Amino acid sequence: MYGLSGKGMDNGIRRSVIVLAVMVIATSPLRAQLVRDDHPQAPQGKEIRQAGGEPLGKRRISQEIQLTGDQLWSDTGIDVLPGEHIVVTASGKLSYADAKDDNTADGIPRGFKDLLRILPFNGAGRGALIGRVGDADVAQPFLLGVHRDVLAPVGGKLSIGINQTADDTGEGTFTVHIEIFPADPHAAYRVARQVNDIPGVDANLFSKIPRRIADKQGDPGDMVNFLIIGSESAMQKVFTSAGWVKVDTDVRDTVLHGILESISKESYLTMPMSPLYLFGRSQDYGWAHAEPIKVVASRNHLRIWKAPFDVQGQTLWVGAATHDTGFEKDNRNNGLTHKIDPDIDLERDYVEKTLVSTGLVSETAHILPSDSLKEAHTTTGGSFHSDGRVLILKLEASANASSASSKARDQR
Image 1: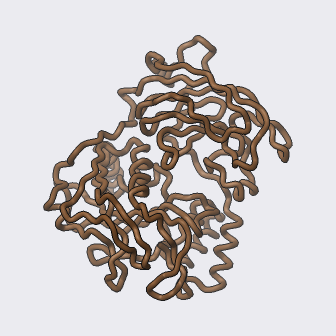
Image 2: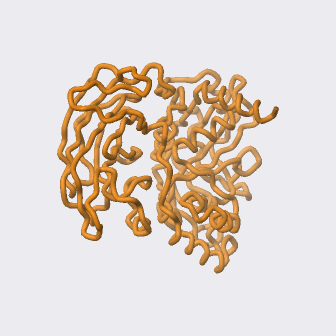
Image 3: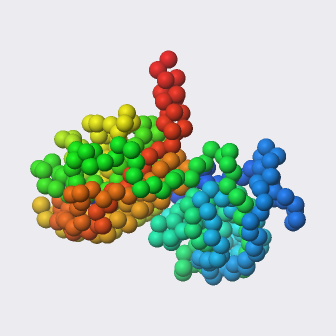
């Protein structure tokens, strides 16, 4: 939750933040680890090859789907495995009443009005062909466009859709040809292994980790619901690769940052979180994931601390993640604060899905501590519940090694 009481934000700053909300430029880079453009469109019947000339492998599925302009999402009926190639080629055009020209599956270039539309995928224009894999509540949309080779971030059902709002649909049809190829065993992308336990993560470790974080007065708040094992630079890399942005610590810094960075999406997304405490200090990092226009009321966010002990020689990060869904009264001072989704396991799962999708996580586990927390209240009075399990994410050795190499070069 962020500090939104009178102490945290004066009227001038409130006006500045509102200006930032309106002036945000709705552009963001595509997540390169998921989308690759290195396959030219192959003529029908020809084998699609990788950039180096090697074939993708034996095609597992080939299917064609008609997607009309009034459809938001359509289940293809295709189950994909993590790391498999989803190769899509789309033809056809859509037309929108207020658009000058018809658009292909690459969509219309984004403009100011798109800030108000809140499209499903902020990195592409209205009318673009997009996809997602897995549970609709946590699956991250990605651009497909006229032609893409996408690495499936997780396993699950493949859905395709049009990047538009329910009350602003296009007219026309896309013909979408979908091919599924096996995962490349030599690719840098690695599928995270789901394991029952991770060496060093045991009862002794959990005895050193408080079940909850607290405010400055020591009032208990959010639940500790995930751990990350990996170097600091590797931890930063996995979050930024998954589309999370680091949060500013002060409102004035946020406004200044927004001005200096030409009022980008990321600068407004970094609206601050209030400091909360674990291991006797406030968070080392805050990370957020949301659309800019919704940030004031709603965003996925988390706090993370470096533990004062390691796991078998590796750095341990301890985190608490919640999903802000609106506003409520702060019982401590009768001010205004953010209300969290009481089912905090959904946010724990959201963290897992987004970070695993980068290919930088080697192992995941869900462990139930002996003194697990299943129901409680935040520092501001909001209630939450959980199954008590803590998510463990172990980062890829290659990510840690490359991070260490980079640090060594910087020190020379």
